[in-house]
Image 1 (cartoon, rainbow, N blue to C red):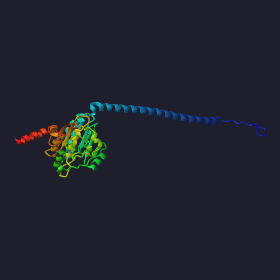
Image 2: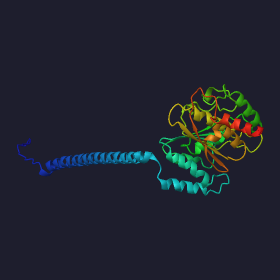
Image 3: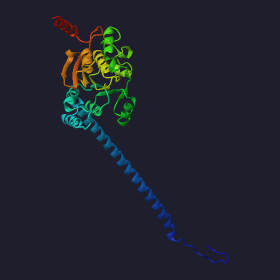
Image 4: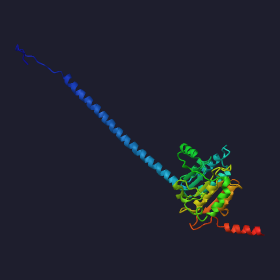
Length: 317
């Protein structure tokens, strides 16, 4: 290159300048390649991990399903015995001893799965009944709405409802007489109690309670320790009607009455569950097996007339 003076000047570009631009591009390319590779590896690992987790979940679900199907999904004997052992060792004075827990547990164990269990009363054994009726339907009925709500909040798995009892222990004799008078009308043994006006029947339970074919009914409430207490006369009558009014399922219903002694529980049990159906009893637990009836039947007990006749003959003699 020439200047104004006619002298020629040579300008040389140093190779370092060119290398510097190429080096920056190489570093940028390496940077992009590294992160691309890292992204691909992460994507592959995530897919493999997800596939493994899905397979493991499916395998676990299959194993659980197989285990549940085995023996109709019933709890192992060791688990049942352990639950009964610890439940019967409670320091609570109102708890059931082993001799009373065992018959109920045995029936639940033999019950075809799923088993429908209806319990009148929220007691020390509430969680036990729920656990023993594994995979089955368990519903609790209690007279105390606040306690029922408390139990459901404390144990969301518990299905509890409150009911208003209109019966009183001091009126038991009159209630029995009224029920006998209306045995062909409001107090008949086969009916939908939801639409009944019988004074002994519970007609304000949730609608679905009347639609379920109950396999086992336990009457363990309400209390009847004083004249104005509701007692268990209404649940006993209701259990007798529910058992006889089944539409399907097992033709027989096991009905247990707790605090079964020489009192109103026994009197009402013999009247509406029937002595002929009493298969087992202790001082505090009566076990009845009640069969469903035709809707045209208007007598709770088959042998009631025969027993009354026998009793009259004996008195005449």
